[in-house]
Image (cartoon, rainbow, N blue to C red; front, side):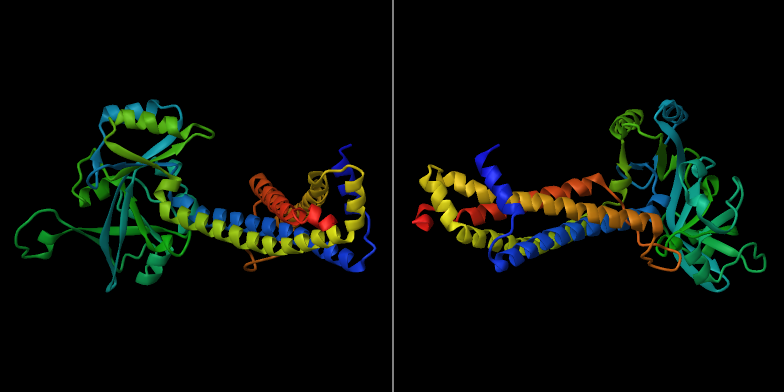
Length: 399
């Protein structure tokens, strides 16, 4: 066995004659364990909150979204439609016509998005599975599905034939407007369903048939605002994007979920990094106890070190003793802290002990990535602390 490692283990697992050194070493060990456990639990909680936050947007966001590079719409020919169907990695895709328009009901008005979708939309998007009331719309009808927030603001119910639910879409063109009919394309809609996902999204969309939206927006039958695409499981996303660009001759922009919600993903990642840095700072403060404990151990073992030096041990070997002692203490403390943190996360996942509401448990996610990140953080910081403390060993100290 390596000489320095053998001595380091003896010092690590044997008590010092000084009770003060034992107390400080115990405090340092507890600090490492608690700091490691806290960092892992907090990262697991934020991973859970991230997945929880993204679950709402993922209800509306498809795996891929095909947008026009210029303008607000583009054309998709029958040949391009067939080419997309030939791509094996695509499970389904839906054509969408979308625009911000004015809705009017019983003396109240609301400006929000009219989203025209085709029959494939329910296979591509999960919003139809989040109906709060009613049913999904039928194709080639004036039926619509509205958000819960919109229905509340307009006091809108389902199948209310006494008060018409109207949509007004500005017409294209120039010139003087002399009447309402010259300014707007207008239609009376039939609400048949109400979806509920989150507060923001519930006030954003009114879903209707694609052909109706194209008529109101003065689109041609092969003109759409964008395409929503659902991929098959475990496919290479980049390869599919290349195939889609080839179909449209690189005249479209293809975005994945992260690119569709770049701001949201950036905010969540920034929060995660901030929390990691804050709790890493807490661990750094706790490791000052480790530095103090090692320095006091060096002073306490000064006579032993002098004996080893006189017997032929080099200064670098004596430094290595306390470097290894501190590193081993960090490793053992990190392992114990991780085990405790993993147990807390798994218990919360299984038994839901901490609740946000009566029905919603605090979300946590166990991730091997977090395990590796926390363990590497403890090892690196513990090693740096040990280097700082072991540097106190010198010839001047022994003399």
